[in-house]
Length: 162
Image 1 (cartoon, helix red, strand yellow):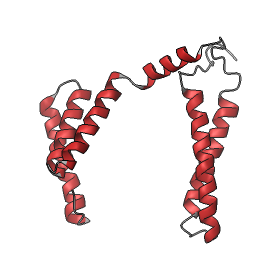
Image 2 (cartoon, helix red, strand yellow):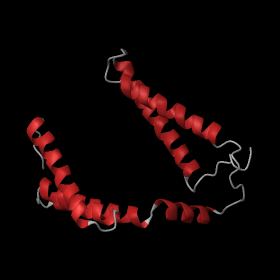
Image 3 (spheres, rainbow, N blue to C red):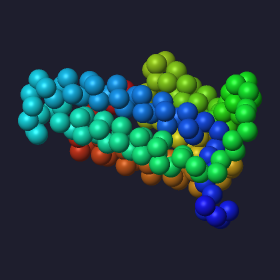
């Protein structure tokens, strides 16, 4: 493999593929059980069976083909170093703040502030944080998004929002 075509993996990619394979296999087992109750192509178990088979096949392809001899760093790494690098790569500052925003959004909904106000605040704060300012533009995006959501779900589908 030439130096230009060398594939490098980021911390946690191989482990994530293995975790997804295990989850896919668990879903496959459950979807087979569902499908066997009513084994027709239009049954409620057909789509989960197809999707879980796809997940398992694609994860096997990634694990067996993509990661085989791809020129990644083969040096031995301690488990502690691996955990720290995966943590630093996975839990960036933006992800941690968005998680905090989501928890605050759920708390606002539980406290009964209402869907319209809670969702508008969540959208505005999240977009303003992620776009690093631009409050006017984000306010307009929030208004358009909330108007669309309310028109589609409250008016067209007549869904009762929390």
